[in-house]
Amino acid sequence: MSAENTVELPKTAKKWLLVSRPVGEFKKENFKQVEEPLDSNLADGEIFCRVIYISVDPTLRNWVHENPPYTPRVELGSSMPAYGIAEIIESKMEGYLKGEMVVGFVRFQEYCKLNAQTVMSKVHNRPKFPLHVTLNAFGVTGMTAYWGVLQKGEPKEGQTFLVSGAAGATGMAAGCFAKIKGMRVVGIAGTDSKCEYITQTLGFDAAINYKTQNVNDEIKKLCPKGVDVYYDNVGGKTLDTVLQHINHGARIVVCGAISSGYTETGEESYDGIKNYTNIIFKEASMRGVFYNDHSDHESLTAAAKDIHEWMEAEKFPVLPVSITKGIDSALDCLIGQWKGDNLGKALIEVVPPPAPYHS
Ligand SMILES: NC(=O)c1ccc[n+]([C@@H]2O[C@H](COP(=O)([O-])OP(=O)(O)OC[C@H]3O[C@@H](n4cnc5c(N)ncnc54)[C@H](OP(=O)(O)O)[C@@H]3O)[C@@H](O)[C@H]2O)c1
Image (cartoon, rainbow, N blue to C red; front, side, top):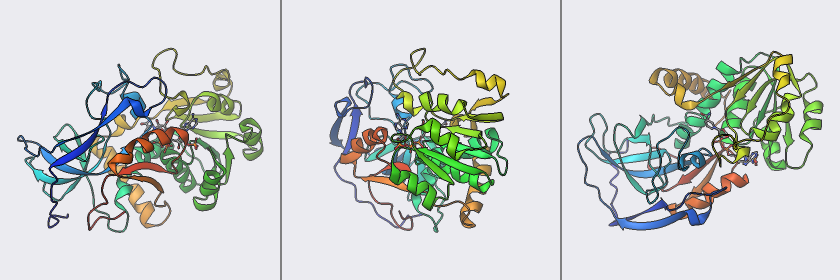
């Protein structure tokens, strides 16, 4: 797309290495920044890229376990893994051209080499929308919310949809899809300004600040007819509270469990759920939704088509992003996500997107 743009390569480039496994939350001392000579030599089947955006996702905490639940082990001393968007500077991969943009496993670094295993897709240029929609509405968070709401949630007009993590990338998208399907949408988020954003700007019907309000009392008040779909991004105590309010035939969509910190796998992972017998008495269902199980070309294309049409028709908004600028500040974004610093998708902008793309 930007084939005429010539990128002058620096002699050195920066990257963040994982040097120790976090105990509990991510800490700065788990990482070390290094600046190394830039090696742009390519083997056949590789592309050399300049990283534009790094996507910061809670599941990165899962990825750095000694024995990660669903990804290969990240060895200490290697660059911190993450996916993101990168511009092809040189290509020895068939079908991938200099100047094109790709989504792939770029890691926390300024430049990367990718191959058929580490490229996820090419970026479609949607000139009307900022480049970051590729990682947001059309990315892992937006697509997971799409399948979670439309397939697992079985949305029904007039019913009540409750979503936690509601001012984050996935939660916002989920709430917007439920609104499109005519549901009453209530969101749970961690600050008053986030609650204001999801109600005033995104049109959710009501919001609960889980840090300052009594979630049980607020659900009673704001979901007077009970909860038909609970889209769960946090797990733990909030899930347990919501289970007391589910209706007969409720659908609980299990998308994430950020309140667990993703610090442990196995038996010690999560707070025990005390109200699970309500799932029996209400004949409710609890179903997981996992991006990786839907990331085949056909499912992605079908979801992207719907989302694109809804965006063009202004039924689905350009969701907000919280951008941290520059590779030097990358850890602020990674650590800040766990403190609730982000409104919408958390991204590191390594360099601004080149024309014709825009932010
Ligand atoms: N199943 C899948 O394939 C899939 C795909 C994408 C994401 N997910 C999951 O979806 C959830 C949201 O991910 P995201 O990428 O959209 O992140 P995000 O919501 O944009 O960012 C995380 C947000 O979670 C909230 N948070 C942090 N610690 C919390 C805690 N202890 N309890 C409750 N909320 C907490 C913070 O907002 P507050 O200010 O509101 O606390 C923070 O801003 C995560 O659990 C993630 O793992 C799953």
